[in-house]
Image (cartoon, rainbow, N blue to C red; front, side, top):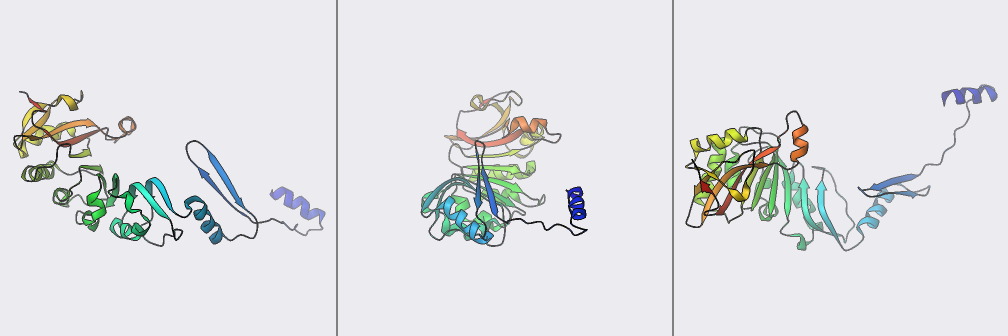
Amino acid sequence: MNEFIRVAASMRGGRLPVVQCTPYIQYTLSNDYQMSTVTYPPGNRIRHAIRRHLGNVLGNGEVSVRLLEIDCQDGVLRFPGDVKLKVQEIKLRRNGNAVLHAIRPVISERSFPLQKISILVQEAGDPVFQNQVVKASGAVDIRIDYDPDGNWAEALKKLPNKIVHMAVGEIPIEQLGELAFGWMENPRMEGSKFSMPSRDVATILERAAEVLPVCNATIESRRCDEFPVGASIQISEDLEINIYGAMAPNHEKELLKPNGKPWMIVMESMAFGSAAPCG
């Protein structure tokens, strides 16, 4: 290009050629199956193009969204005035409590309770744990960024959700024991689970007896060849708490990482008799 300009300049007596171009706005929409390109004619402003684009994509009325991911933690989010999003899952970054309050007006009431919500927290006292949208969701994914000294057990005990998964971060065995005692004092419904990926699942299972009144047991319905023996605590005539190892989400990908966590520890409230004591 530079050589072309030098040649053109010499042909014009040393004067640089005038480069003419027509500005335009273009954006691309893509997913796993297709890609579409939309081009706005000259004269459009970016602000107007974005507004028109949102109107085309969202329209006016209720729009079904499987996963609503909000990357920003402050600033302004603009939506067409009449749009409502019927959402199955929400994923948030930091400042989740404030973001949830901000987007609440555009979430359809038919979204609640959410199937799942994913939150990023920096401390165990994060106000997002008290948000009713979070507490009413069927499942909560927690990513810690990062307060290793926080009393996470206290925060986790107060979450009434059926499924709680610590996707990023771990709590020490002592806090896992404290959480289990909380479940013993206030039994959770059958099927309630707490899970967290760990590189030390075997150690956690071995040390469970140090902090909890457990017996070694096999849980046939949750059998994992890597960790065939788990731990069990009877808490009533109908319920027991079972602690066992299982494959973590994205197990295959985690196996390929140098510091991956392909396995996770699971604590589950199950019907009494689900576990069989063993030596």
